[in-house]
Length: 148
Image: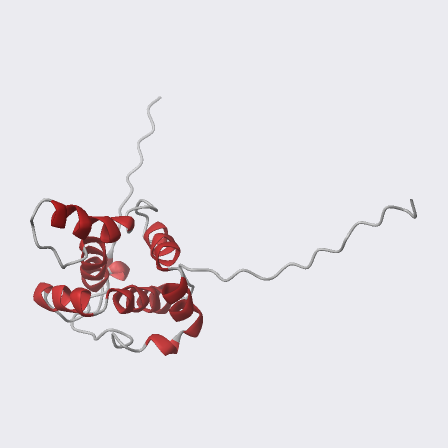
């Protein structure tokens, strides 16, 4: 006996609304103070967490740190952070946000940290959760030695 099953997928609910704006501006970092501070004090950790949240290699954002240095050694001027640019463009395309590649390049060059924060805010808006999670402090009580 052979059993056949037909599965029909509909991606209608996955289609973004065309032409919407970013949910926050490039310099609206203080809308999410935790992410802003996290990005400022430990950008590599922040960017790596976002990369992992997007399903990419966790260490991929480190190319934004290394690429300009390696290119400069080779005599090639490079000011565009490749990972921030590609992630900003991918998020813009995924959610149907208005914009152009030229604008993505400009914003990535103007303030790389702000681009990462904007991506995080956009992901939070669409996923209703952060790709960057805060840790709850844990208090550890000393173990008593039983009077010895």
